Amino acid sequence: MDILVAYDVCTETNEGKRRLRKVAEACLAYGQRVQKSVFECSLNEMQLEQLKQRLLQVMSETEDSLRIYRMTQVRSRYLWTFGNQHDVDYNAPLIY
Amino acid sequence: MDILVAYDVCTETNEGKRRLRKVAEACLAYGQRVQKSVFECSLNEMQLEQLKQRLLQVMSETEDSLRIYRMTQVRSRYLWTFGNQHDVDYNAPLIY
Image 1 (cartoon, each protein chain N blue to C red):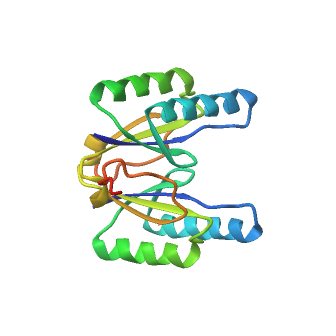
Image 2 (image 1 turned 180 degrees about the horizontal axis):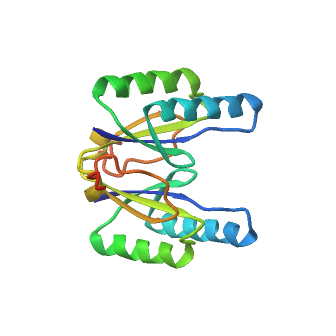
Image 3 (image 1 turned 120 degrees about the vertical axis):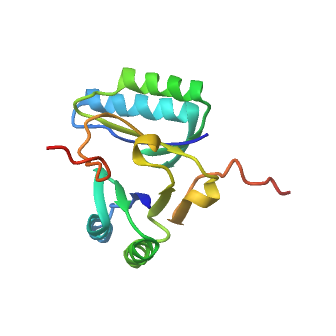
């Protein structure tokens, strides 16, 4: 299952900056960064629940925003990109 | 059709800051801001194409990143949120 994780963390305080690092670390452990605060992950239900719990432990419910989107199609059908991209399509055929 | 627009604009220059404003203006004309650089829009194919063209005219292909996701389910099934949210679910029943 393809999952999109988007977050806004309030970094006005050092505590906020620490949360931002922790949130990015958690997302990197489960997927790839496609924009500064947007990650794409390919997860099963258990992994998704683990990621959610890990993020909930770090994020501030009053200051931060977390949005998780479930994508139900194949990537090539739901995603259109323009510009400076750094992501890898892990589902694309490996051609050497 | 529900559309998610996520962007990163390089704001190291004044030109970049101008692009950021223009990109946000364009997205606001077609949908609602749900995070700093994430918008949700409910568009038909023509409107989506118009939004894409408007964004492409403003964004830098080498410095900026634009990712547009097509959501195929109803919002309640694809979206999970936590924390500080400002969005409105236009598809939710209006209850007074």
